[in-house]
Image (cartoon, rainbow, N blue to C red; front, top):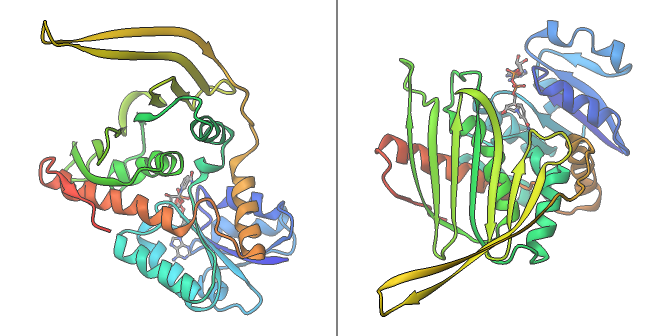
Length: 336
Ligand SMILES: NC(=O)c1ccc[n+]([C@@H]2O[C@H](COP(=O)([O-])OP(=O)(O)OC[C@H]3O[C@@H](n4cnc5c(N)ncnc54)[C@H](O)[C@@H]3O)[C@@H](O)[C@H]2O)c1
């Protein structure tokens, strides 16, 4: 049995508590939030769960094995570091930290102490992403050439992080989970339409050594909500529309071949347009699988899918993209 405590019961925290409360081999012991009004009624829904305004009541609690952190991004590092140093396994919300250096520190502490460090990159536990991984690893779409995502809507302007830090972690985690290539640099541009200089529209490109490219379009100022990703292989192409209730994935049997016509000094392109297939994907709630993976990883001492390394890879791109934006799209190398 893994006994967990959760810090931060705002918008996302209740979803985590609900899923951990119904997970096997798990007991939710305590929930902390500065805003006691938010947690005052928890025991009505979850009898036996204690509440506190002080996160240290969880971090210092000898009866708690693991801490879940669902507070704003700038608080993640201090809470996660304190929990790990107190011997607790940690599940921290995305994005993992505010800097790569902080993420690295957490990874080191977890490794030294043999503790599980996981990031709630929820999308990695969805049926749609599972299906795309199966398609890519099974070579159904051929060699992957591009990943192009759009995540835009009339979104809540965050007071502390720009739109990439807010929205891109989902797509970046999916990219890292699906595509094995290592990024070498980023270019990003963005604009702030408010006086605080926090970008509400941003476009990020990740460059690779081979001929693969990834691109992300994020906005809080779109009149329509779009959550779609194109993944192009040299045999087939995938369109992933997360807003579709069940038919989230379409596989286009579409590709092209090109030849050089040296005489005419031009490229000849042949197109092939075939059927479109809609595979069945699991509609199980992803957070139930997040909870399961965290608990199993602790009990079996295995690495979770959304492990600390993946969380750090996401933060590294976000950090580099911020430098690029502030330097008008300059190419920023990603140092390891
Ligand atoms: N995985 C997902 O799909 C997903 C979705 C939404 C939010 N999130 C992430 O969850 C985190 C929280 O987001 P949210 O939208 O729930 O924020 P929120 O502001 O609604 O809730 C945060 C809560 O944490 C409390 N809090 C802050 N610092 C605290 C501290 N030190 N000790 C105790 N309580 C503290 C606040 O009082 C608040 O109730 C963010 O990292 C966000 O990116 C993830």
